[in-house]
Length: 187
Image (cartoon, rainbow, N blue to C red; front, side, top):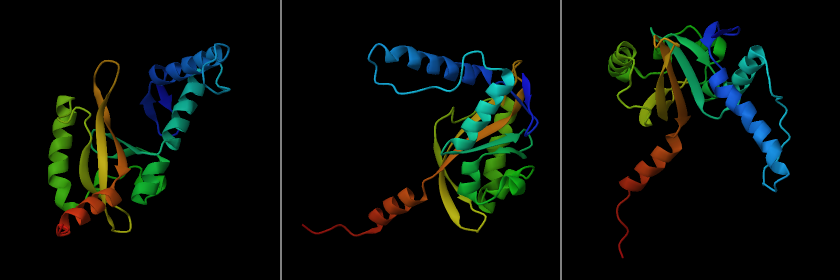
C-alpha cells in the first residue's frame, strides 16, 4: 500500500495498473499476428510504484464519469475533473467538504441513512448496480445523475470510505418525461 501524495490517500494501484501495463505489452506482441490493435504503448514493463500511482491519477482525471471518493464520515477526499464539470465545484472548493455539497436537501436524510449503513456493514444494498437520483450543481440547477457506488476497503478488509461514479443523464430523463407527458397521437 502506498500513499497518494496529492490527496494523502492509501492507494494500491498495482491491481489495476499492472493489468494495464500487461495489456500494452500484449497489444505490441499481437501486431505481428495481424491483430487490429494500434499502439504504441508508452508504458514500459516494470514501472515503479510511483509511476503506477501517477498512471492511476491520470486515468481518474481523464475518465468521462465523475469519480468522488469520501472517507467514512462522508468528507470528499478525491474529486476528479469530470466531477468539477458535472457539479460545478473546483477541487479546491469540494475537497474536505461534506457530500451535502451536491445532495439536494430533501434527499439528505435518506442518503445518510444508506451511506452510514453501507460503511458500517462494509457492503452495498445496490451491489454495484446503477441507480438514478437527483444531485445539485453549484449554480443551483438540479441534475439527474446515474450513480454506481463501491465501498473501498484496505487489504485487511477495513472500510476506508466510499467511491461513487456519476454521469449526467438530465437530458435523457427530461426527454423521456416530455414524451410521457404528450397526449397520444391519433391514428
